Image (cartoon, rainbow, N blue to C red):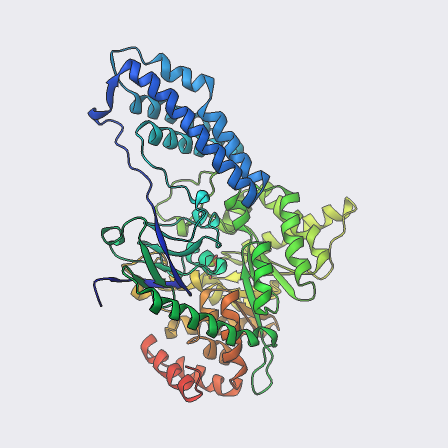
Length: 575
Ligand code: PEP
Ligand code: MG
């Protein structure tokens, strides 16, 4: 590969050509002796840094107000208050008594002490203030030292974002109008940032080794989000051709957005969308989903500055249900923890957060937070066909407890005179091997299963879905995983329950024939993947896929499985 080309993992399809913006958070050694300055200068520098910070925050506030609304904009009101807080500033100034002072260290200590006080409080609202204090401190320090702070909200021209690692909350702030691509050192196809990039339809290449050694700010580069390529010296004409070709292919596929999903031998399955918010749904509709198989409700929690209220959640759920009132909309209850953190809540320190206090475990331990969400869901249920789904169910008791809590909350609402739909389905994710193994028992209680392969794969192979070093073990089409899927479908069939899949595997061309063959009823995926998946399913006979799937269940390796599927699809001229 030419030295102008960098390789990574293609995480979100599409072609992007634009100038780079380096998202680098400044690192500051507060104890460095070079920060020692004259007291008078320190006082003047502090005043100037406060003034600059307020100006920056005013600008961010107005951009946020325009793009994301009042509530998000209020975060920056709070930041402005903090940077100008009389008590905090007095504490700093009172310590500028010596001839020579380290202003950087003083600011750091005073703000850290404030953050610590907030962090130690039990109330999530006050805990959240700690994150704000640290954010403001970093801004103030950068301004004292004249360091540039990268600011995602202020990007207002075509840009390719280059970063070390993009957090899911960074991704939530990206604006597709200006962000033409993302190149990142860290990240995998199944990381939440990648999933969000796909739903935002921003081309993304993650996992590029030593990216910052190769790239500079403000140079034009091109990225190919399907093949995982970054071109540092793009020939614009060639890349524009690639862009046009990509757009033409997308147009050809669009005809499948208008069809229903049905195999050549007449088996009807559903292809649904994975979404993160009502706006995703509006965009997803263009790709022809037959309902929603996964609404990741945690995105609202993650982009908020505090726990979202019942009303705020109700509005979001209602909006999605109303957009497809005749199709099933499966909303997953809060799946927080692991790599999905909240600015306003500090999770306990754990050695393995992915195996720890998260998702349904967190909700069942915090019933007040859970109740708010369940009330909002039940109230929204009358606007369409609702499925409520619990994440990370490991044992039957958890499912029964969560389901009972929903039924009890329903009674409460009805007592209050609020309407709740009669036909709500209550199901669960199968993403822990224990749930797959005992699926026939879970199926006694659950109305449906949705197989979450993103996690099921990581737990089956004991392989962190975010890790680069063990990514070779992340094997969707390994017969071991296929057997888990098959076992789950058989367990559900025993009790005449339906099974969907909402992990990334559901949209993978090399897995679709096998899933179809095993009898999966619903495939839920990023909206952009729907037309291609429908083209594949509508071009196949399920009976042939069944024979293929049975063969692969008897193989030893993923490569053997993939070779068989590729040969099968090639024969059908589908690849
Ligand atoms: C999964 O684990 O497959 C899944 C869909 O959930 P998430 O990716 O949000 O963990
Ligand atoms: Mg999961």
